[in-house]
Image 1 (spheres, rainbow, N blue to C red):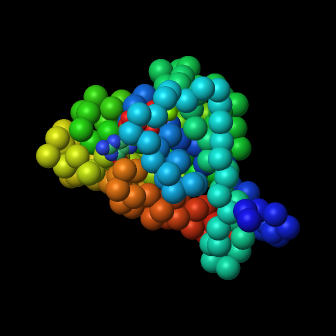
Image 2: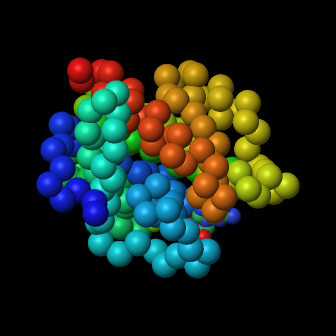
Length: 177
Ligand code: GDP
Ligand code: MG
C-alpha cells in the first residue's frame, strides 16, 4: 500500500496558508487520507503529508505542508515556503475577515516563494451556505485580479477538495514539463 516500490517521476511541494480555523488541516486530511474531524486540534509542529497520484500519465508525489498553528502575519518562516511550487490560499467563506486577510497572505507568499508558483484561492466550508459572508463574485474578482485559480470547497462534504488539489498539480506539471 502507498508509495512502496513505486517509481516517482516528480515531487511537488504545496503549502497551505491562511488564517487559523479556516479548515486547512481538514482539507489536507480529506485530500490525503479521506478523513475529516469536526473538533480538529490546532496543528502542532510543521507537518506535511504526501499523496501519490497520476498526473498526465506521470507519477507525482504531492508533499503538502500544513502550518504549525503559526497563522499570524509574518510568523510563518521562509523554510515553510522554500521549494514550494504550489500554494493553497484558504479562507473560511463564513468569516469575512479570513477573506480580507488573503491579500496579506498573498503578499507574504509572493515575498517568499518562487515566482512561477501556482496559487489556488480556496473558499472553504461551502457546506455552511446559509452563513456565507463572502460572495462568490468577490472572491472571483480578487482571484482574477491577482491571477489565481479559485474554488469553493467543503472538507466536511468533500466538495471540490480533490478537484482543487488536482487542478494545482496539473498546472504545476504543465509549467515544469
Ligand atoms: P486550520 O486551523 O485552518 O487548520 O483549521 P482546521 O482544519 O483545524 O478546522 C477548523 C475547524 O473548522 C474545525 O472544527 C473543523 O472541523 C472545521 N472545518 C474545517 N473544514 C470544514 C468544512 O469544510 N465545513 C465545516 N462545516 N467545518 C469545517
Ligand atoms: Mg491546522
